[in-house]
Amino acid sequence: MSKRTEHVAKGKTANIVSKDRLAISVGELDGVEVGDTVVVLNSVEIKDPDSYAVLGVYHETRLRLRVDSVAEKFSIASVVDQNPTTGGFSALSAALDSTRVRRMKVIVRSESAESESAVWVEPGEPVVVTRSIEVED
Image: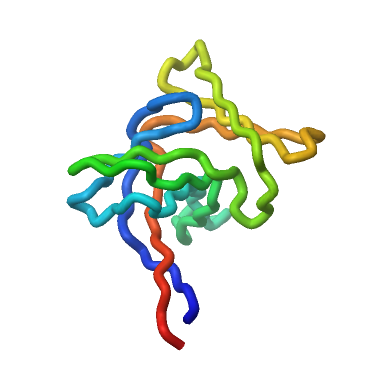
């Protein structure tokens, strides 16, 4: 048996629920299930430097979350880590930015606590929901 990743839904960050949990704008009606993976994307529009024509959009993962609960039209997901390829994160904390009430700063610390990084998340940012499924070889 091996695993493959299946695309479930595209949505947006909807609200800040608590210090390390976000609501997203897709839910049961969109096929989202508890345990699905959510990635918050940074989307950069790539333009031709001469004509300024849009060449495409580059998407980069900024934050990874796991779905904890699912309602009909939204889901709640908890922060797993900032960069899914590096791993090793154990402590997460978040603080609301007092100048922008709906913006959340997620601080991700390494296990050794020698380094930390922050990710700002605002409602309306694009997310993709995926699911790992086992398939027979």
